[in-house]
Image 1 (cartoon, each protein chain N blue to C red):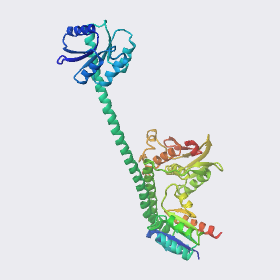
Image 2 (image 1 turned 90 degrees about the vertical axis):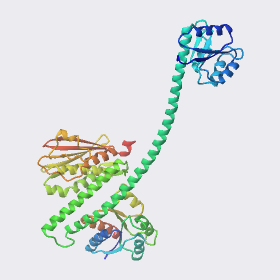
Image 3 (image 1 turned 45 degrees about the vertical axis):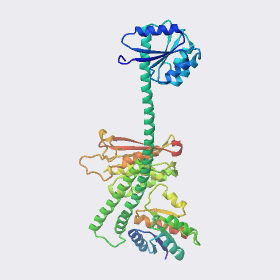
Length: 394
Length: 123
């Protein structure tokens, strides 16, 4: 600050105090001051209004204004110029209030020397400068926050539109992809049933491959569409009351053919009746996937399904005597497209999405899937769902 | 001989389902559009209607609504579609369909389902 003369406006009616301050400022080394005086608030205001004042030293008791009003009046006129209040008493309530209202400091007359006065002025100027910069930063920040909020809002609206578009696209693709598959699966089905005439052994074998590939493709499409829907949060649940035991008997029936083909045993232990309030189709999807995996990875022995009701939940345990899993492979189970390679075994048909979808769907239903497995001995997957989806989600 | 009206815009599916039904001895009427389906339904009064939901002119819901509003409102109409969305079945039943069949069609179970709906009508 050496390079610049500091312009001080002293608003003070006591000639002795004015002289004292002038002397103290003259004593100061290294800093040049230019002191102007006003003996009334009105003349002080008038001088300050003309500008270029760096700092104001203000006596609160003036002929035309007393106490805090004096400070308020000049402070309202000039929020950029730092003000130091001069007072006669150490515990001047007005002076303290003035500091609370924004005065930089107060000095008690008679207890000030040159060093203190100069230091107070310098600190006041520095503080004011810092305050101004802080205020500027705050204002800029506020504008930036407002701009960013607006940008975020626009982005959100756009995202929502995209989400809806994606959902419509998925729905339409689902229909478009399945329609030709219906023909492939349907006609091969007809031919395999012998409805279109007799088949040679080789024709039957090849058509069976076509049919299986068609079924596989259909499963892939369904899984991919499910994944897209799950990730776009566009899965709609259809919650109603149904007999879980009935559903489980359906599940068992649908595996009859493949179980017989592989020469396995499929055991189902289920209560006679077990009413559950949830999305039946989705629950069935999860359990079908667990059973299908168990059957897929079991070459001999049995797949056992046990259904029990515990603490307002239905627990479905699917246990197999299959190939089992190593511990290090189990963490990858529920990830997308994670296929665990098994030595000496052809990679199983599948999408690599089954357990990922199952996990997501079961989350949606308020359920959990737990895995226990011993390599070479077998695996046990346990799915637990709330008996009432509505109550569990409330 | 029982008559079944098939309303379906996809040629392959039309052929597939017609083939199966004829094989089972049903008399099959075909409509490729919704309005055409309504017209044939009201004129021929088939024993069962199999109706696709997505059709080029009026959709299966609208066609069903028109038949329900006619002088033959009790005709059994089964939705047959690959719209496998949650709540679609409920929607179909709410909108006046008698039943709901999902594509792809498995010849073995499809014919059983058809017989089930026919026997419901007969009974």
